[in-house]
Length: 361
Image 1 (cartoon, helix red, strand yellow):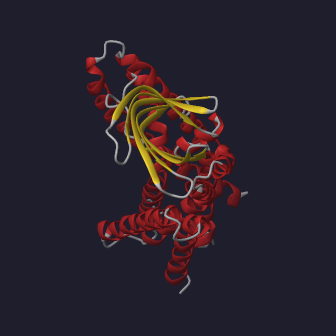
Image 2 (cartoon, rainbow, N blue to C red):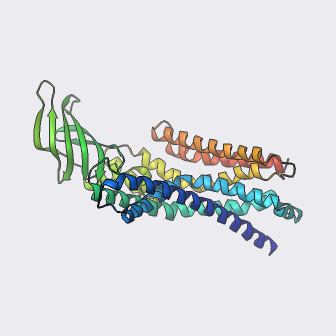
Image 3 (tube, rainbow, N blue to C red):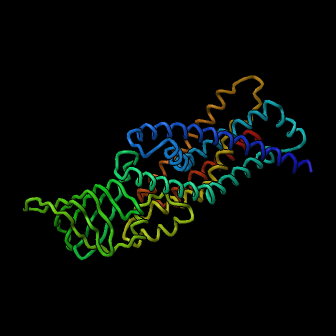
């Protein structure tokens, strides 16, 4: 009974602290993004404060997802230090609990937080972000107001040969593009012509490019009101190719990866995002172990700031390693599985080794 009670107590303490830190950073991000979006929307009478606040509320959860590992790190360190200063961990040790027994509740809490963030929070935040972007398109309709350059790339093989398309922005699942440029190559690889258009719409069997400028080698550039580019892409394939991996809900990532591959595009980003989300619960457990490695010391004789600074630095190094391996995996230099799981596995093992050395000799 005593073991179950203290386990629940430690787990609740850690969960409350982690969620409080995450919510605080979430609110700060909301204020910053809201003020910036309100400033950019000041010249549009249709975008009132309530509309901008709604778009901000739907956009911030996806951005706040990035800070979850740091919320777990800082929350774990704060809780461990508080328990140590109040001698609660000293009492737990005196009652016969080992370091692994009172680390188990926060590690389990971090694991559950990671599972909930992947299975529930991520799909909701991704869907809200997509809805926010659609609201921006409906309100403003042109890039450069509130939209960010998404840099959409498409590659297709059609009756006209190979066509490589680039658009500054996309809407309606990628079926409407703005500021489009297309390079068309012959089936044997020779360059045929380049097309630049203000907008492009996906219609059955063709891309309709409006107000196009067509340039071909040895010919003068000509303007056409509408240029029809044959395509075999379907709206589903275009949606898969134009939705960034970070904006795709967790449960849709395998399907989007399959659709992207079927469209002849690189699906590595979706595979990497899927594996990264699968590894997130273990990464949060690694953050708890790193925090415990630097926060369980009894600070009777000072040295709190120096020790905690080491824990924060270790957490940031782990995050940087995660980003570097993610970039390498996205570039195809290493396997997505290795890129996603290595930081969590290495962080967990290092935290365990440090605790074994400091606690068990």
